[in-house]
Image (spheres, rainbow, N blue to C red):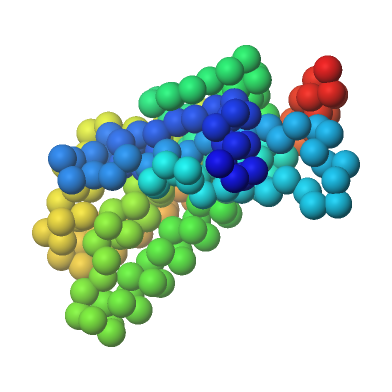
Length: 227
C-alpha cells in the first residue's frame, strides 16, 4: 500500500457517497462516487516531502482531500466540497468527522452565488460548444448544471443546504436522457438564474464565511495530531 493510499485507509475522518446517489438522481446504471476527508499526521508535515493535498483511490470512483485543502476549498464556496459535507449517505464518520460536519454552517456565505453560478455557466458553455460541434450536448452535464442552480437558489433563500432534488427528479432525469428540447432547457436555466439572483437579495447567509472558526478548528486538529 502506498503512503497516499495509507492516508485514506487509516486516516479518513469522513467518507460519503456523492454524485447522483446523494442527489436522489440515481438509476440502476449509476456509478457510486465516493468522496472523503483525511487528516495527515501532524508530524508528517515536518518532512521535506509534504503529505498530498488529495488522493484518488484506492477504490474506484473514490477521491479524498486532506483536511486543510478541504477547508480552504469549502471556504471558497466550492460546490463539490460543500456537497460532501451535506451528503445524506455517510459511510464513515469519526469524532473529527462529526466535528467537521457540525462546522458546516461556518463554510456557507453569499460567495456561493458566484461559485455555484460560475460552475453552472462553465457547464453551459461546454454543452453549447459540444452541441455546435457534435450536434448535441452531453446531457448528463446539462442535468447537473440545472441541479446546481436549484441547490444554489435553496441555499441562498433559506441559508441551509439541501442537495436532494426532491420533486424535480423526473424532470431532471428527462433532461439527462436527452428528452427535453434545448430551447426548453435554456428557458428553465434562465428561470433558475433569475431565482438565484432574487434569492441573493434577501439571503440570510453572511457576506463571508466564518474563516476564523474554521481555522481555529483546523489548528486544534493539528494539535491533537501530536498527542
